[in-house]
Length: 208
Image (cartoon, rainbow, N blue to C red; front, side, top):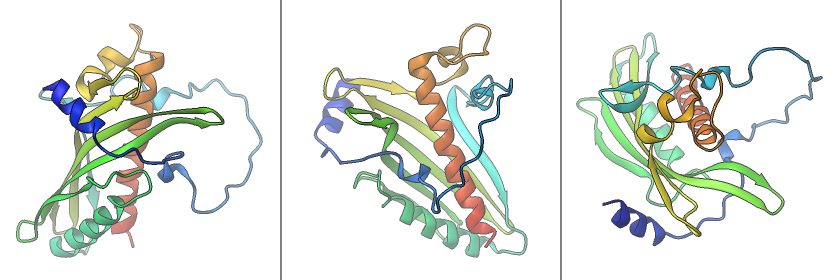
């Protein structure tokens, strides 16, 4: 099955992607002076940052939208998600695969570049696939990001990973759980950053 999945992904067109477009600020950010402190810069990525539910990695959040109907929430988030599937780092396969306005729920399948490093002569990235599952009700939306997989080093030595075997505490953290292992750690860090961005965009959309 893994060989079949890798061969299928290998047939997809290579896209010219630079850095993660969602990490580029809409406006220039002010330069702030460097402050030395003892806070661990990886603190948000350590133990418990990747939740496992029934053996599967599942990021989820409940977003409040007081005064908005389930239909309004559903339509707003569906429209936002459809725009996101056409973002700069997306493959053409990214799309909404299920939508049900009567039940106020939809599912989107994302296949995108997740960029770790983009410098002169160095472009380190992986294909990441995941599903967003959204259920809406009056005044709130429940959002899940799950079924996360990666295809890495596909042009040299293709390596396929699932989130469960790669970015969980067991595989990405040292025994003391105070440091990230270098390779799975970078996958864990960027996946959490991507999840945080998506959830914040959904919240922003519902706060308009």
